[in-house]
Image (tube, rainbow, N blue to C red; front, side, top):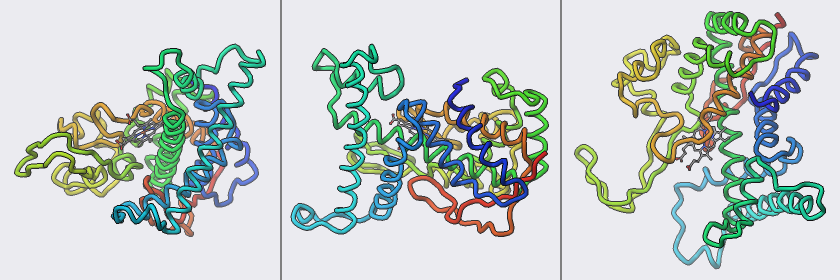
Length: 345
Ligand code: HEM
């Protein structure tokens, strides 16, 4: 078990101590938590250091999703840019500079002898690839910055969303909350979670899968057709971009039955294959195929650790101020946050 995950959850729960009996907005709480986790595990820095990058990435995500379906007029964008294009460029340059600062700090440590390598975390591996002796294997600096952006964003926003929606469903379905808590207490008692125990949490696994189905953090993925292909009655030409609507598949009554919109974790009691009637494309929160999510196991473990530690300490119910408004900003987010009332056990 990664100690950085436990330490980051402990920091969050320490802050909650003074707020018992009060309303708490968990989407933002989990934003800090998941940012801290990815900063510490992948980049060896803390949340504050990563904060500048996260803030810029969040603003960039809003601009990208706002302009995604606008077709640029060829040639025009070279001489005239919209306000959003100018802002996006500024943000992209800002992110580039921040990543470069982190890279330079590590390089300096090696040059001054303070460290004997660039590190074994994700950033360390990227710097090694960027400095590769063999030119053919060498990463460009643009590749390095791009990989960092993907990892920061893919690792944080998605898990942030999953954790928040899971708290929502458990705050509404209190029987499932109690069942999941009982399981956590049976496996861990009042001890911190460990990997062996996490693998035993069957009820929690069902709850997390049902949340991933109903509130898939990544609502859709895009793929480009490489060569002409027949898909059912359709012939898709090469170079066409298609959108695969994950969330629509997860809400299709033909695949899931008439109770498709209901929260029913028992669907997953016999595992994913049985829940999907052996249709592997019916449940794809992490996409499928060679470009599926590399962080799946990390994300589900982080989610289960955080949930276990919360359930060990608190019961929670939905606050009357909560307004249900899921909206996609690249990931599926609760537009007005998720407000719950915390009750110490
Ligand atoms: C609940 C949490 C998560 C969900 C639902 C999720 C979902 C996805 C999906 C659907 C894709 C495919 C995107 C596409 O093809 O356009 C993807 C890709 C990716 N994810 Fe995740 N992800 C999660 C957490 C994470 C975490 C924690 C990390 C890193 C620590 C991560 C790293 C990545 C990376 C690097 C890719 C790109 C893989 C590639 O292009 O080959 N993800 N993720």
